Image 1 (tube, rainbow, N blue to C red):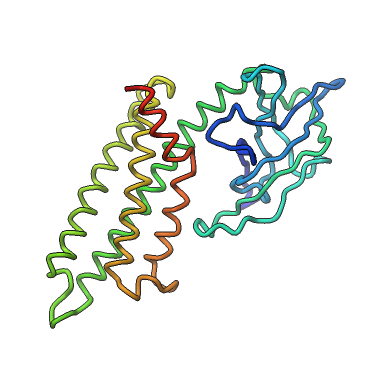
Image 2 (image 1 turned 45 degrees about the horizontal axis):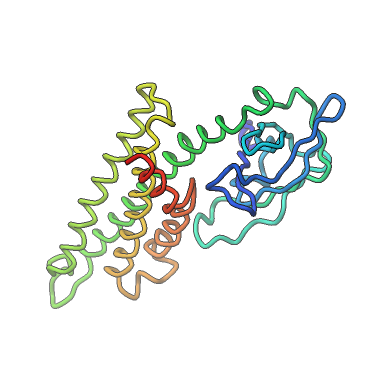
Length: 266
């Protein structure tokens, strides 16, 4: 608990993959008045500190029979692994989760048995992908502001390096691409606010996630370039933004999956 607030995590991704939820192997078998869960999850944000975990498990033999359950911290058979040593997002605890003959009561089932896949895809699109686009946008903006401030202060040939055309053009490109990323992200979020279903605007959501992740990576790398040797030092922010930007490429579905979604809608 943090300041009286309960922490919750969402567990979908498994070692077999996360961009394709139908590859989930974790299984829930009905037994008596509850379910027995066996399987594992990986790359789960806040997995080790969450008070409750919402997770997806296979409850049938077809490729679409999945259900969503809640499990509380401390439930027998439910454990968290060690914290993953990711290069970016160092302030976020990311861990594995394990289910070994973990029993949960029937009331821990969310919705109807077998209807979980639709909810998972909706959550991934509306929270995972739009949310990740927002994170990437913030990284890009911060990297740009850091580079701009440095370029105005750093002197070369008795004038700020901002006056060098090569540096000014890099900053101009950053400004344009970040603005474009804002419009793509805000537009997709606005469509959701207007009541559009994520399945009907999957292309718009995928565009936002793909483009902002690419812009974050490119902008952060250029920020490191502008700051030169200083940009690679851990006490400067640029290298942290670059490492964080790499995490956005896979989060919420890889950029290649976003291209698949966009291509499917063309």
